[in-house]
Amino acid sequence: MSDKGYRYSEIYPSVLLARFGNLDNAQDGLNFKTENCNFIQVAEFGYPAGHVMRAHRHIERTPPEKFRTEEVLLVWKGAVLCTIYELNGKRRIDRILRAGDYVIVHEGGVSYEVMENNTIMMEVKTGPFTNSEEDRVLL
Image (cartoon, rainbow, N blue to C red):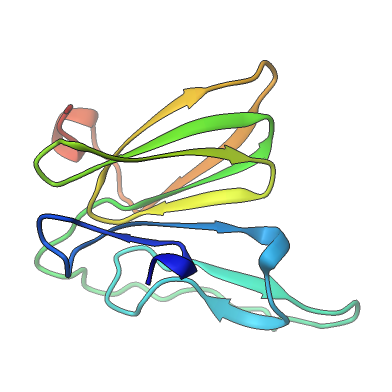
């Protein structure tokens, strides 16, 4: 499935490490880029002028027993080197992200290096966040 931006583990082939995408490739309508079982839900929206998304709020639910932080990094401007790591910490993929590119990090490790001055990016994670020691382990 690499043609769709999916990057699976070489060690555990059923484990999704990350998914890459670009907003320039967004299709018409609502298109989820994650599965219902993922901890983070990501969708691309492609609607014409005048389309209305009804007002809503999300209801409180009991979280699953097992939980992992997943994140999305979206590059607005500039360039970022994104490196995805295997579950054992081995470097797996290097990809330069530019304006409109994003990565959804599922079970893989990740590092980012800013490649151009004035780069602007946004990171979105599942929460709640308590502190770095409870949220991650350095590779």
